[in-house]
Length: 114
Length: 112
Figure 1 (cartoon, each protein chain N blue to C red):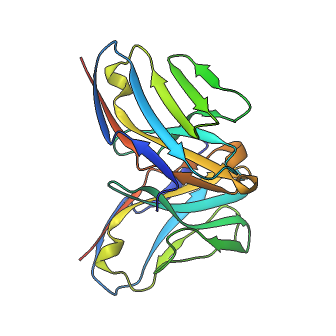
Figure 2 (figure 1 turned 180 degrees about the horizontal axis):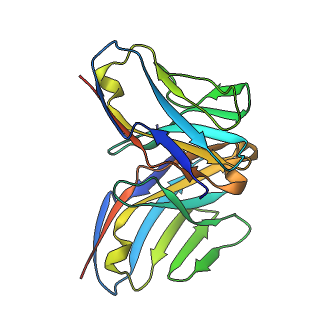
Figure 3 (figure 1 turned 90 degrees about the vertical axis):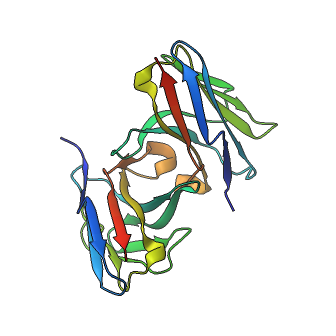
C-alpha cells in the first residue's frame, strides 16, 4: 500500500531532551515536507526537501532540523524541545512539486513537551 | 500572517443541506488552489483542486468556485452527509508549485 509512515504516533517528552520523529514513504516521491498543525493556525510548513541532500526552510523552521540522506526518509529532529513545540506534526510527500501533484500525508505525530 | 484566509472556523449543517467554506488570498502569483479533507486521527487528504483558468470545478457533491478578480475561492458540499463531518483546509501555491500554504481550517459537522 502506498503510504507515508510516521513514528511515533504519540510522544511525551521533557524540555531539552533531543528527539527524532521519523518519516518514510514507499512511493518513490521526490518531494517531502514537514508541517505542524495548531488550532486556529492551520498547517504551517517547517522544512521541505525537493530531493536527496536538498532541504530548505519553510515558514516556521526555528528549533527544528531535518536531513534527507535517502529518498524515502525525511526525519524531523528537535535538538532541544520546548513547550511551544507541543503540536501535531505531519510529514507529507509528493511525486514532484505539490502545486502540481498534491500531497500524500502521514497519519501524524502528536508531540507534548513538558 | 496567514497567506490564505479561511472562514468560517466552524460550521454546523443539517443533513441534506449545502456546506460552504470560503477562502481569500492576496498573492496574485498563486496558480493552484486545492482543498484537503481531514478526518479525526488522520492526515489531510486531497479532495479537489482548481487552477485559475476555470471558474468552477465539480467532482460529485463537491464543487470549487473560483473568482480570480476578487481573489477568492470556495468549497461547496451539496447534499451534505454526516460522513462529510471533518476539518477542511483550503490551500494555494505558486512559485512553480514548490510551496503549498494552507488556510486555518474549518471544522464541519453535519447533523443527522
